Length: 546
View 1 (cartoon, rainbow, N blue to C red):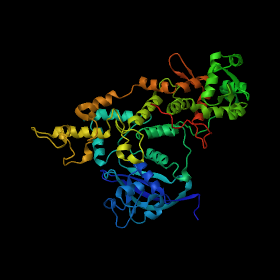
View 2 (view 1 turned 90 degrees about the vertical axis):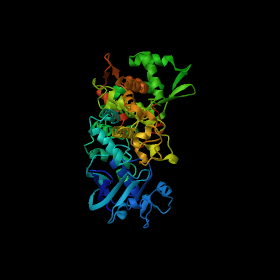
View 3 (view 1 turned 135 degrees about the horizontal axis):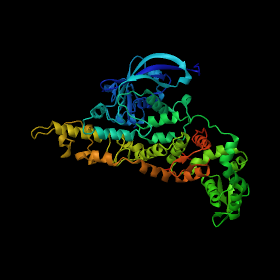
View 4 (view 1 turned 120 degrees about the vertical axis):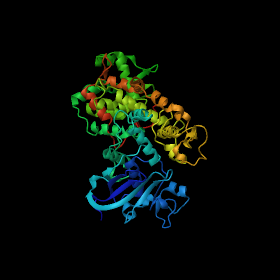
């Protein structure tokens, strides 16, 4: 019988085929993992293609056919090869598949992307170490959505050559794509980032490793893959996993206005006159809280937006769960924090604003909203056109392929593949002599489909944004300024900022934000993961940015 406190692991070596110098990683993998889970971990290890078309096989020669029937996959694999004998990967475990030989994990949409997986020594470790732990590795990671070694080498060559015509544009695009939280160093193997990607990919797939997602996890997944590690590292460094620290007196001061509103409505409610709260109750609140009547009306409006109260029979009534909590400042603190994200029109804007409060950056005059605003715009742009000008995230299983799920960072429809195409064009033009032209140089004048070159070298269906130097103009014109990004942030988070103002958020005359230590802890509480969402409470994905 297996000891639940121990984990039987095997060291697997993952080598990205077709690259030079070699790109490889080693990881300790639980022997009981299925190939379906190993698939997700392998993709995350290299930041590989996210579409579902794949196969496990003895080697690349037998990826399309194996006389021994040693091929594993899912229904897409079966459909791609028109072969119902493909073994279901969800039923095959690492311990049984890896015996004495290695296998290959290949991406069937593009045969250039494949990983050789070799089995090594076994060991027994504590179950707390996790089912898929990166040990070491060498070699530069491929770009997100590289269509194979050729594109990867072209892009790295542009990065390494400051004299290249596209070097500045590519650097600018990288700085935009990695976002304000990180950087891209092509000569550094970031195993920590790889482990974070693996943990995120395996969350929910392996029961022993289940992690309750935070409010920011969906924001991270909305970013381009190059931007995710930096933001994930910042979230971890911000200590949002730590419980908030607040005293009874601090909770009392922060929730005082809402406690009065809920207590005043009580079980019987407050009359609504012409759609507004009874003026007598408003005047009573103004005297009790020593504030303006407008402030009291704002408290009632915020309580309704946060779904603490609702109108029934022309009376404003408090929900039973909040009515019982209004007698305790700390209990009301927790319920308000849980409800806070309901009042923002855009859930990403709400989560990012709370992050800026919780990590202290909002109150820093040198940062303010800058980083979270750029992150918000980057996530929104990635959603709108992460797969080119005609793509969107509204894909279904029917169009689940590389073209539908291309994760290239878009700038006015120009992607990594267009950079490669432009580099080919430039190289072809430079290689032309005395009127002779290379085959690739004909792409601007005719169709390359009949030419004897690799079809994936040039994206024939892409719009001509990369032709005649348009790539340079597109990448420059599409960078959003700090002021523009902050304007988007303020527009999306307007309702939430209004509620936070009722809880003590202030803005100085010079534009800087004033955040109390209690409000920082309150924002931390609002971002804490919850094992069971309260009925009727949303705040997750479902609100749109654009």
